[in-house]
Length: 246
Ligand code: NAP
Image (cartoon, rainbow, N blue to C red; front, top):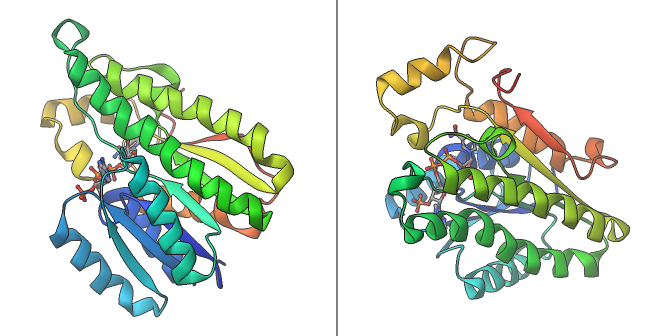
């Protein structure tokens, strides 16, 4: 249970982030949901989370912007008294083969997925260090572990997230802050709906459990990592992938 805890979730109004928000709120946590531009999804998320009776606030901005990260953590700490959990979930893809990938295609994905994670971690870690307690959960991907054709930018960003997770776990452990990554396989969200039917079928054939993952599959794992039961788990990359990695 997460009663009395508070969490900041980047990209928290849609897809996996919203699934995590729902699970956290259900378990009693107050939430700040950060998002970039989709106001409609943000308002819908607020309305849906009301049923759990916890505090939920929104923060609109770009995770690539360090100032936005600093202000968001400050605002959440003021609103809830403290920030116990950070979920670095905001992420994008921009798939192309390397021969067709511009430098801008590459750096934009790195900026959002990796630098964005750095930005929020930096300010949350400073706050959590003062409290001598915290949980940081980063969304990586199976692509960060084994690579994927057409996703050099995305895979590099997600491999970077793993490196960041391990280094931060080593740096912050003595301050009672755990840092872990979740590496989902193929989860049914807007991100994967962007793939063609043929691509989706090809992936399905590689999943041992014979189904795509749901946001709930990832949300339950995040809630476990955020809970007291996971107090001695740090520096881990937890696959939630239906066996696609094998
Ligand atoms: P999604 O449905 O596309 O949602 C992405 C969320 O991130 C949105 O809320 C979006 O905000 C936010 N976002 C994107 N860029 C941002 C930025 N620069 N600043 C602030 N917010 C930003 O994605 P998803 O499928 O739920 O994926 C969530 C995370 O899981 C990502 O890190 C992704 O790489 C990872 N993952 C997903 C899968 C999968 O199969 N779906 C597999 C492995 C890993 P707006 O709502 O305003 O657009």
